[in-house]
Image 1 (cartoon, rainbow, N blue to C red):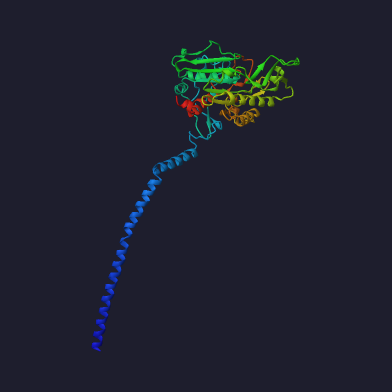
Image 2 (cartoon, rainbow, N blue to C red):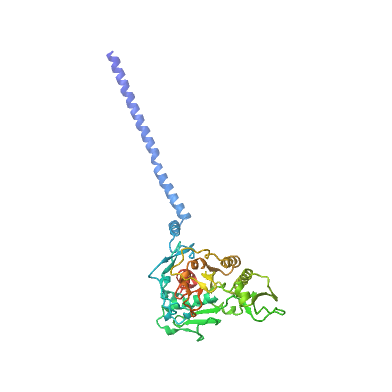
Length: 425
């Protein structure tokens, strides 16, 4: 049994040795096989790197652009002052005791006496303490020095009725705040500021800036020469198919601002002025004022498309400003803006302006200044009894300084600095 046991032990030992040697050879063989994986991986990584370099040489720039785009989208969505999609005319009035008035009308020789409410005895100043705040952006504070440099060498033209003249006067008074030598600003023809003069032009000599106003209440040709057979009730006509005959003086400009609307009423046209519409050789007695207004705007749009150089001239068109008449020659001037518009934020004529310009303007871009909602709250900013004729109330025009300064601040501080033809100065 002993021998048997010794034999069995020897056999077991030999088997174990063989098994051990076999396992060592297997592990060594496996390791030798896996060693080749490392250079293969290295070769693969080198190939990927080379391919990426060849196909995407500017990958870091692409990542930068992606990062910039993401950041830009974040900025836009956060409603900052540089929002491209901001509707600057959609907002509200907020109190601001430090921003206005920008100038003193009594120190500005170009502020018409009829709009200078302080000079005519208005005592309250609360109506000057309101800033227009758009919902999605901010209007930068007006800086006269920067505005003068931006406009250096430019010609600015306002065309329209007395509300356009008010904006023209406001524009000049605002810019004069940055002029040290006031005598360097003068009316080029030596003319006085009056209601009926057809052309007024002011020169800022040291900055070579010209600011013109052209009185054209209809923007269309107005004539006392009547067609043959016109009835006696017709005193004058408005040609709905012809733009004003001084329109050639408007086009050589860098900035054009238009308005028309206040004179387009049935009572004023047909009764007070005895003025009727003409197309070609025919008088159009059956045409409504609104239809005439729409046709006139279409005629203006055709003229603008054919005559304005969009590579030089920036064009704005103002909508209708709200009035706050209580009745004939009666208005209530409040001390603060109204809490509700009572429908005055809407205007059929304003809708026509936006509709026609959107449809017709293709070659020449025109920016609509939709002022109707802004003014609808501001019954406090009208001239009221503080015009040049205290016996006549005025709830159609605005005091200077006042609301027209806000229109110009939007132009000078918000729109024009974003436009290449002005930002390059």
